[in-house]
Image (cartoon, rainbow, N blue to C red):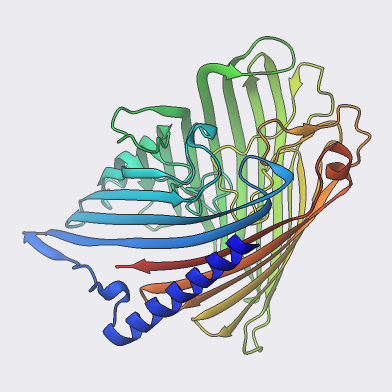
Length: 453
């Protein structure tokens, strides 16, 4: 526990120091706000900016690569963004973002990751050109290195809680938006960037290909409908299946998402995805779904919101029949969606989530409590957790209760540029974990400060 208390003390001192600096000088770190809308010529402007984020994390009895060994880890994360945003009237835009992401005192070797989630020094994180449409021709183009995200980030999400950002794309998108703003559609093709810790990635080294169409329809007030087709490919011949040697990955995803508000105090969202294609030598027959509803008490001063969500990712009922029935997470984020400790993926999963959010100080202080119940969708399939080799009971006799997780997060907005955040999470191991390997409970603590400029 010595590491965690040292980290908490350092984080607390840093937060107090930054808050004091912000109050005394009007800007954290003594940095003045970056200049915006600098005129470079007729209808040409440049805005500079960025963000610096520091976070200390302590994990007990788990890491990103194992669970239940009785050891912990404590480390400091740093991420710096420096942005340059060129705008050419309402016609075009060029955006460049450099990222420097580092981790100190980390127990996992860099060789443990193909694409490192925590460390990537001095990287070109985004660099794209966007040509915008007009009422006469409502078509646009966006080409270059970019982040892609839609809806609630469940299908596409940049996963920026990870220090390097999980999904970054070298991609081209064709953009359509109706003049009245009721319909938009993106057609895209791209490849995901691999984070090499000490190499400047201009050689276009990639992991997955992605392509498809994502559309959004605002047909009725307070209701949004998304329809999409997404393809995910990996031609590296490294996807192993049940019925033969490793082969290519080729997943087709067809689905929809609906979300909105009702009667002012209710909010809801639902997603359904059907998957088919090739998982190496096996045929894919999988599906995933999510449904959530929330109610905000309008007359209460703290604006409490109660929420209930269910996320389901299909599992493989027979691990020897040559069919792959375990749902794949596509290119979605998982931070906050399936527990903040990131012990679960949207794969062979039934996740019941109960949440309470309050705002004791309006627009400044936000407190959130989440409680998760995790079950296997299929008892003969695996728990796809942090361990490189997923835990599995092929006989299905270890039960389907994987565990429960309690998450407490607190965020405080000191000013427009400075935000503090902290959290404590605890995982209670269930029968499946107890029957298949190391099974002690796990804890996670973090303290974070982020300054934008």
